[in-house]
Each structure stands twice: as structure tokens, then as C-alpha cells.
Amino acid sequence: MGGDFLRAKWRSSWLVLVLALVISLAGSLPIFAAEIIILHTNDVHSRIESHIPQGAEAEQGGRVRVATLIEEIRDMYGKDKVLLLDAGDAIHGMNIDNLFGGLPSIQIMNAMGYDAFTLGNHEFNYGQEVLTERILDANFRTLAANVMKDDGSLFAGYSGLVKEVNGVKVGIIGLVAEETPIVTHPKNVEGLTFYDPIAMAKQTAAILRPDVDILIALSHLGYAKDVELAEALPELDVIVGGHSHTRLNVPREVNGVIIAQAHEYANDLGFLYLEVEDKQIVAHEGFLIPVTADIEKHAGVQSIIDHWNEQLQARLDNVVGSSNISWDGERASVRTQETNLGNLVADVIRDAVEADIAVTNGGGIRASIHAGEIRVADIYNTLPFDNSLVVVEMMGMDILEALEHSVRLLPEQNGAFLQVSGITFEVDPNGLPGGRVINAKVGENRLATSGYYTVATNDFLAAGGDGYDSFMNATLVAETGIMLRDVMVDYIAERGVVEAPEGGRILILE
Image 1: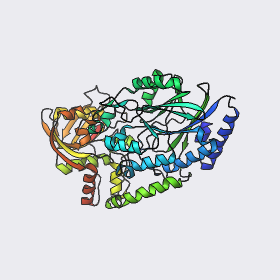
Image 2 (image 1 turned 90 degrees about the horizontal axis):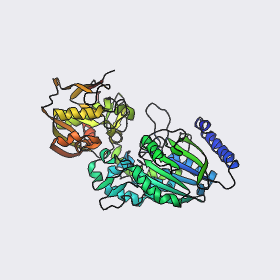
Image 3 (image 1 turned 90 degrees about the vertical axis):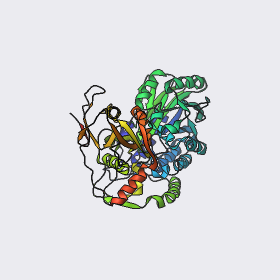
Image 4 (image 1 turned 30 degrees about the vertical axis):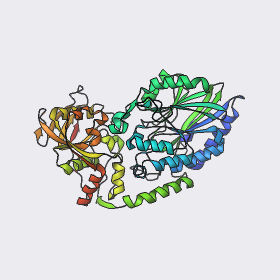
């Protein structure tokens, strides 16, 4: 059934198939079993509106269309049978959220009737004060069992939730990525401790399990960690995951635990049907519902979007330049290799302060820029984080260590992969750790390990973000306080037409 569903092309087809699922599963339901529908999203990254991915022709995704699906599924099954969950990285990523502290997404999630949400690492990008306000603005429960303040209290206020769904007591535990302190600015998590999520899940499960019929982990840990979690906690029934942007077309069972994840950007809505009897899941069916342009936009959600877009438009509509080429900021590209957009961003950083070298993490580049006019909005989408420009002085040996850290996971995608300017080097992916980077040159000269160089970067990396401990040995030269995205706006506005920068900076050997 799930496979047939995923192959459905038109909206009418999926409606027929879901209705068929309702009828067929209801017909086989044991006399004393109860049915529950879990609808789930993850890693939406502020895609409240539909979007056109690079190379695609039609819109897809967005909470504005997901809301329509959710409403129709609730009508099919009954609201009391549906549980709506989000597994984090929901309220940061696009201009409409970034410039208003994530409030637009929270208002939309309120309107959609979410039941629970766990914090993703990117929720912390706003800092604790703003994030606390957003938690209070939410009409749904925010869960984070493994994030605590210095005084021992839970940052989000709740580790778990017990909710009755169609007469079934459902326990939900929220888990946040343990590496959050190195993938957000350190100042955003000062005074917080991110404990081992598996250990904290065990503690919370021991409290909740006796009082519930089924137990769910709402996890922003990534699929690999979810597998570890399932192996360590067979007392869980379901893990609804996020963080790794994994597309699980159908749920996977590990150690008797059902694991589900719905890719990214609200391009799909996760659908998991459970039959529960005597605190056991006796049957289940799950799949992803593609969020295509054939699904109508939800009028109520669209009205919220329209309100916030009015606030946003005056700031972002200004055209600052143009280009005859497309600029590659796709996740799979900037996290594994140099790209023309990565080179441009690094050049902008170096040019602004006339440093010897500039580096910026690929994970900080979040969108491509299409050929044609370039607006402030395009630049803000590409560089959505509130990162400022910093200049440090580093020894060559520390720069080399940073380059090794950058390429250590190749060919895996890695947000710490550096886009560079003023330096070139070769990478042997098969080399021993610490010896993968060779022939590093600054300009025409070989990098001197005992020499000193000025390095321009963003404040995230300068503070040791993404695990760059080598930056902690650097001497601060200038902390400009100027936002990187604004530096790029000025750079493009000054030139008018942006040409492709020189490439060949990072040569990855076969």
C-alpha cells in the first residue's frame, strides 16, 4: 500500500489511496484495538511557503500545503485519532523567520494544531532569550529531555509529554542533538549542558513507560543515532526522527522499534498508522505523502504568511546586482567540494578585511542563487545565520589542522567542510588522518607551518564552532560586528554584475 501511495501522481490519487487505507485497515481492526495516526515533519527549516528546488519546474513542499493534507486526514480519520509531531529544525532558515526570531513558523504551527515539538540544533541560533520566547508563544509542548541549565532545570521546561489519542495513552520524549554546542554559536548555549540523549531517554522512559500504552521518542539526533537509540531502548515503540534529513519512504524496524523520518523542507508529510491493543502495536503501516503543487494551499496558513511577508518585503525586495550564471549552494555540494558560490562567499569575506586567507563553513551556506537579478532576499536565504565577520591571526600549523578537520569525513557531507579564498590545496581522501591535505599554498607560496597569517572568517568558526579547536589558538585581530550577509550585499551592490571567481582551490585526488 505504501509503495502504491508513493507512486501516486495526482492529489486525487492520494486521496483515493488514503481513503482505501482507512477502509481496509479499519476492516481488519481487532475488536479491542484502537487506531492512531501519527503525522510528522522534520527539518522544515522555515519552509512555510512552497519552493522550487534547483532544476525543478513546479513548486513543492511548504507548511502551507502540508496544512491542507493534515486537515483532510483529520477529516478522514477524526481529529481524536491524529497526533501531529515535529522533530526539530523548524523555525530557522528562511528570511521570513530569521528576521522575526522564528515567530512566523510558531504561529503557523499553532494554526496547524501541532501536539509536540522537539528542539533542533538550529532553534538555538536565535539565542536562549529569543528561543525561550518562542517556546512560550507555542500552543504545543516543546520537549528536550537532555538539555539542562546550570541550576539543573530543563531548558525547555519539559522532557516528555503524556497525551491521550483515541483512548490510548501516548508518551512522547523529546531528544536534542548532543553536538548542538558545536553547530551553533557557543554564546547561544552558554550555561546549558547537552547530555547523552540515550542515557536521558532511558531515565525519562523509566518514568513514563508504566503510565502509557505506547512510548514515542521525538528525536533530533539523526538516523544513525536513532538506530542506536532503538537498540538501547527496546521499551520504545516508535522513533520519529530528524536532523539527518533522511528520506525513509517506509518506516524501518530496529530491535522491534519503528523508526520514521520525513526528509526535509516539508517536501513530504510522514504518515504512520498504528493499531494498538493491550499496550502493544499489533499492526502498522507507514509512508511519505509527497507535498506537490497539486495540493491546495491552506487559506488560514496563507493569511499568516501574507501578514509576515508584508513586514518582510520592504527590507528584502531591493535588487542589488545581477549575474549571468547560477551559483551552487546546494547542501550536497558545499559540504563536499568547492563551489562557485562557496568561492564567492570566501572572496567576499577576504576582500572586506584584506586578509591573507578566508574560510567559511559549507554548512553556513543554505541556498543556491539563480541567474538573473540578485535581491537582498537571495543573499539572506543563502546566508541565513546571524554570523559576523571576524579576523584572527593564526600559525600555519593551525591553519593546516583546520584544513584537515574540514576534509576528515570525505566523501560524506559535512557542514564543517571549508570554502576558501587565498589558499589552495590538494586532498587525498585515502590518506591517513592528519595527512590528507597536501601542497597547501597561500598565493604562490607554500603554507609555512611556523608562519603567521591573517585569516578572515565568521564569528561561529572563530569561536570554535563546528569543532574547529584550532581557532582557539588564534589571536583576535578584529571583531567587526558586521553581519556576513550584509557584507555580501554591499560587495554585490558595489560591482553590479557578479562574475564567477577563479576556481581550482580544492583539488580532491582520485
